[in-house]
Amino acid sequence: MPINNILVADDEESMRWVLSKALRKKGFNVELARDGEEALRLIKENVFDLALLDIKMPGMTGLDLLDRIKEASSDLLVVIMTAEASMKNAVEAMKRGAYDYLTKPFDLGVIDALVEKVSRAREMTSQVSLLKEELKDRYQLEKTIIGNSPAMREIYKTIGKVAPSDVTVLVQGESGTGKELIARAIHYNSRRLGKPFVPLNCAAIPSELLESELFGFEKGAFTGATERKLGKFEQANGGTIFLDEIGDMPFDLQAKILRVLQEREITRTGGNQSIPVDVRIVAATNQDLEESVRKRQFREDLYYRLNVIPIHLVPLRERAEDVPLLVEYFLSKICGELDVPLKRCSNEALNLLTSYNWPGNIRELENTIKRAVILSPDPLLVAGDFPGLTTRQEDGKGEELSLEGIVDVKLRGSFSNMERMESGDVYAMVLEQVERPLIRFVLEKTRGNQVRAADILGINRNTLRKKITELGIELRKE
Image 1 (tube, helix red, strand yellow):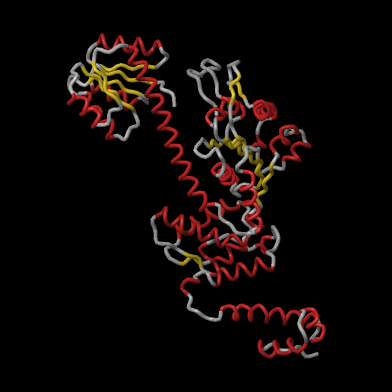
Image 2 (image 1 turned 180 degrees about the horizontal axis):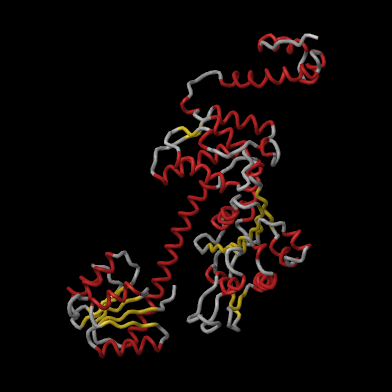
């Protein structure tokens, strides 16, 4: 992270003048203070990268000011200047958290070397902080991508295959399905871990501002551009840029994204210099880009450059077997955030949540659970705590669950507290409850013809007769 803004605090006007002239000549923004109180006010009003503080000033000394800076948990780097070259001053300054210590008089070359040293230190500190945040996010990510359905297992496999390379990925899915989580998973499992992950929602920024947001701009490029600004591509250099809702990107701007993919360089708005960038692009959309290409709303060449590895996130209604897992995760997460005792769902409520269509997908599910946790005073959430939800069959949207999905949901609902169950013949109990309706159904369809029913079930007639007796199935009387 480069140094831009420097504060010089010294009660000697000549020292302030010399330092400000030398530093401004190097291109730095410099603010001057005559004493500690003025310096503290400037620090509160501005953001500085480096402060050069005289150790002896009227009123608040440089060391006192250093204490105030550290008390505020500021990451401002402080260099103490003094005309008294004593070990006591040096030790005291460093003990209180000064980055360095200079003895007056000093050559201006020492200041140049010091600024360079501070720049390297800030860059290293920035990288370490970034790595810590990346690792923290990665740990959280492992707990937030929830699902064990076949569709999710395939996505996990794809992430594992594509993450180590720099291939461009296009994540497609409805709003609320977790496209950014997938993009982060790709980044955190790649060689770019520890480098920036920079997300940008192309639909959330006005089209006239999107270009400068992506590519940055030079000072004076337009009214209000009082200083140079780095765009998202430069901020993501070495890492990954996530272009969310890329289907909403203006058509003319798409050509410039294509150039980045092809040439690996950008040009800031108002500039004429090509700047190389090393970024991996992961894009996402909730639109049908093939249809947009046919309607000439999206560039065909860009679509093919983005769609090297497509990942399709199925809506929640098509992986309803994951809902109980998501409910359990969100209950734990939300109760922890709200600092309330852990709540759980009744079987009836869980069945309702699993049967609902979820047009807003995982985002809607999370918000629904949060609302119920906040409004319900009881530790057990019941169906009545989720007003307005209708079952999949009632609202007529989506497809019904598969037989396996229905069984999975029922089992999870029935045995959600498995850890508190006593040892017993659960296997036989579940099989009995499945066998009884199955045999009853087949007998009904065959009008009580046991030979035909045994053939359909794939068992012999004697076994069928035994099951009818054991399960207490009443035979239909013609």
